[in-house]
Image (cartoon, rainbow, N blue to C red; front, side, top):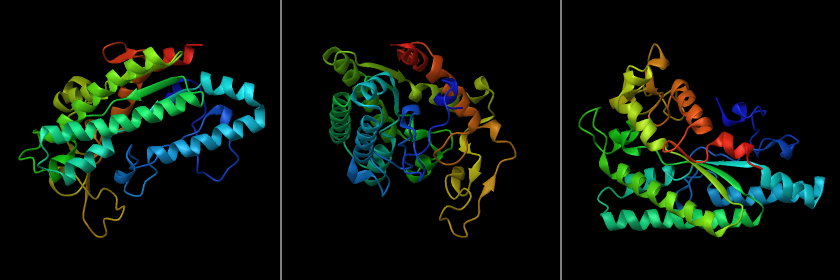
Length: 284
């Protein structure tokens, strides 16, 4: 279930899909594996590249409907962001013995780049942005496997520390932008704590397993779900994905996603605030 469905909009087409886009109805710039920092994009479309594509959309809108109408569309639109997780996955994997100061320095770099991009988008007419903060990365089956968690119930600390630092800095950065940029409104969904609670207390939310993945091979079913370059590696699939928080090593099941989507749309502080997505859509 997506924000578009809650808002009674059609599912947003990918920007690179070879069709004639009607940008007044929205567009999707998301990229699997995308990151804030270019050096950590692993060949995916990183955030700076997405901004380049967005600028093309702005130009096209102005050509098709005129500057004044385009500015109205851009300012009334709601922009959904979910960034940072892949940056910290990469950092945690490649810097296993990073000190707290090195972690803080890296988070500062991510937040600094993200803030600069938000200011640039504001200059292009963006006014309403909804954020999903970074989740409990150290609790994903993949990170528990890669960073050698001794037991399925034990999350690994370094990625959790990075996510916590990021989320605090993100909240401060957005609050600061709101005070400096007239008309700037934002929403933050506390993905970290809402997902963590489902991982630690699955039965509370109608799940049986919050620790291992439904689909995959190896320890915690962390890898190789359905192929995807896995070659001949064997993998298992659970009987009922609805019993699991995690579908594969890094992605949650549809049931989990539906629960979280409702909170993004209509949750209240401290889960979602200072606005939720529904309120951003209703805000003139």
